[in-house]
Image 1 (cartoon, rainbow, N blue to C red):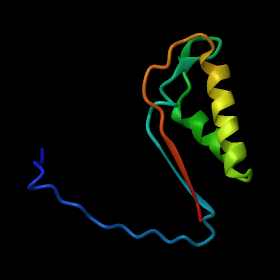
Image 2 (image 1 turned 180 degrees about the vertical axis):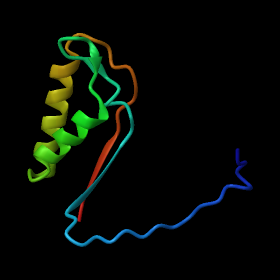
Image 3 (image 1 turned 90 degrees about the horizontal axis):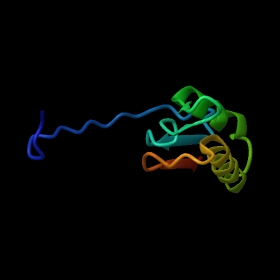
Amino acid sequence: MQTEEQRIYETHLLPADGIKAIYMTSDGYADQFGGDSGKKFMTKHLKELIVRNSSENPESQLLVLQSNLATWKKNKEQVDDICIIGICL
């Protein structure tokens, strides 16, 4: 375990050849319970949803994510904070 004084940060450079966007998410969307069986949405399904809509404009992507989440969770409470950041390059 590192204290703030001991925390080590490293810089990683990733080649951006052909990359059009980068997405970062918290675990909130993937961990949301819902669907017909009341299970978690799962990271795999979130990745598929993002990839499937990645060619849309950012506003459309947001609407798809919001609509899908509402449909998924139905009447279940949101269990965690949800943060998804998309950066178009």
